Length: 268
Image (tube, rainbow, N blue to C red; front, side):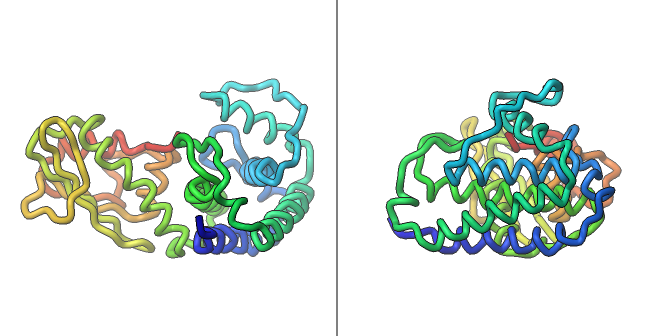
């Protein structure tokens, strides 16, 4: 297996973008709440710190959070323990820890041989290799960067390679959203048009009870045009679609479009 050079570059680009933002924050900004339930900007970075430390082979915390009210699964519980263990720290201290583990990860990427990336592991989507996991790691890091930027009102890095990569990951779930969740009838064709910092168009067709991505759509039952920042926020469950959302427009079957938009969240 060859080295996932492009994925490494995308991940490190996200880190660079985060560094340029986080290095300017004061303590009140570190403590700003994000759209993630119970998590501040500092908490979100704490999560990234613990993730990269774990991938570097460093032990996790023995601390146990007392409040797990926002936790939905074992991964979420692990994350909450790590985040809570750093809540008493200054934001600058978490940032220093982030810089330290980031330097170690960059060194590992630069010096590891191909076997490092080809080793088998369990990923959030099932068995795979570390190279497979890197696809998810880039998306996760970029999404959390955007969580932080929305909370602070400091948009950026929205038209990057990592953004386009993240879009490609989320679109994989579009047939499931259209077919299984929104229950689009057989013979339906739905067009999703993403506009803004990232521009793309996708089509989903349903046939024999199944939905799939197709290359073109001549007469879609509905066309959903959505600004890219809104698409990512809704896909990740950070925000929820409302019919009055000016970032979204619908042509055609408004009931079908509403069912799709209501079921957009595909983030675990």
